[in-house]
Length: 217
Ligand code: AMP
Image 1 (tube, helix red, strand yellow):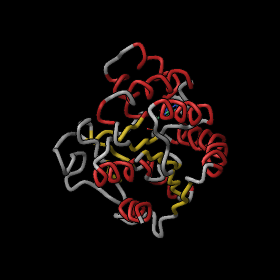
Image 2: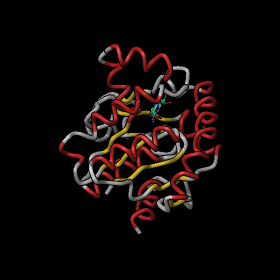
Image 3: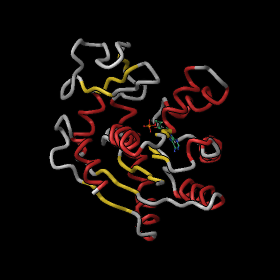
Image 4: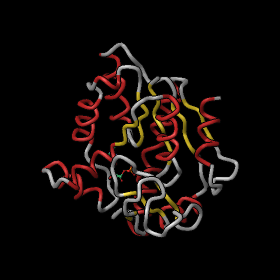
């Protein structure tokens, strides 16, 4: 099953994507994570991506499409994937369809997580992520804190704050999301694969689990 998760930054789509990936035993592909890995390794691609990401801007389509195209040739993607943060523009959505079509596949379902702005801002400003790439657990200092502050409950690694999780970049990321998502919603609505998910209580600790239950219903 090929699933594209849509949702504003901080809507919980990353957490929901991870849960879905685990439940369906499919790889979780996050373009944001892929870029952050390149930035950490200080590769040329990472340096270029960082010049956009740190300002809350989108990395150019061509660059982004190429890394996803390459990832979708890996063997572990042949039964499906959970895409998180890609596509973000109509050009990326069209490119994804073309890549999948060449493999005789298609996007099966596009859940869109709908969460109020205030919850999003509050969540992003309080977000802490496990620095261990293999783990990547996400905490919220206010709503879902780790047992020991700054330390991951699951693997014991240090928790870090993303460089683009600051008020200025968040404002920009939300604007960029709004500007681009309408095209994507129209695109996937026409293909009859869009499912809107509105978590009853988006601040609940198990909000992402509930969203996944709703997606798999
Ligand atoms: P995320 O972790 O999905 O919030 O992504 C973090 C940042 O990486 C975004 O704000 C963009 O700058 C960049 N990024 C991630 N995915 C994409 C994409 N599909 N297209 C362009 N830029 C992206």
